[in-house]
Image (cartoon, rainbow, N blue to C red):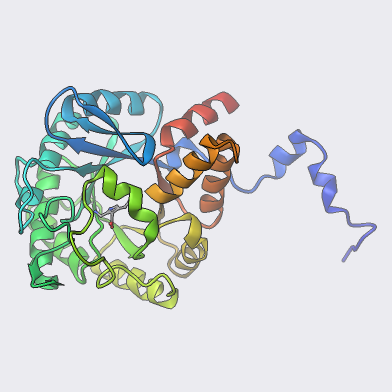
Length: 327
Ligand code: PBG
């Protein structure tokens, strides 16, 4: 084997054409999933305090946004709903006329080729902001799973292309698969948030989705940030229960987990560049401390390099514009 001075790794870096030819990872618009927040009302487009250029939108505004997203060549959106009323049982989550169900119907009527993914969880809908039904301060697993299954079914009935449970209750993927199949939705895939950590990086999302827990935290169901082998067990059980795509979340600080999950299972793998990852890049760029475009592209390329086949990112539109310029 050649060694220096015969071997010179810089030979393939001297000019941009060569660099393009040997590049191993290429971001593409097909990788992108764009998260959107829906609120009741009309004519509403309200910027989220901690997430510049991310908005809460009423359904009419959302439909226009989805048209634009489709035209830009972004293949998919994921929807989060902020309901009219929150209650102990999060009943708007599984109401056929809930905010998400209405939003999905409206988008599907007007935007034909955009994949609509719905986030299936209770935390935006419960008055206490927890991801399930409570007994005292404890989240009841099996009772919550029943409601999540109902929620996913109403999303599919409204026309959702993919349902994405993000609650981290045990057994929810199997329950969702069962109810979908029983009602004829055998073709609707489940994108499971299989490996979701109890992360501080979700802070800004809770402004956007108005879903901060009234007390306590999410550590009784989301994963301990220190664990990697447990991530493999989580992914394995969701795959066994019927998940079609598995997700790791957050993304940037968990590249090792994306890599391990992809290596071990070889499943279609999604990664969520979450609100805090986005907000940190935006804030540092605003202060003039980093080059926003460069860091954005670098962070997403790294997530793809680690093994992600698709990336949920608030930067989706910005990335699409940059990729268009490169062609
Ligand atoms: C739960 C959910 C959360 C996010 C996506 N789905 C919040 C949480 O678990 O507290 C966070 C996404 C982000 O931070 O961008 N419905």
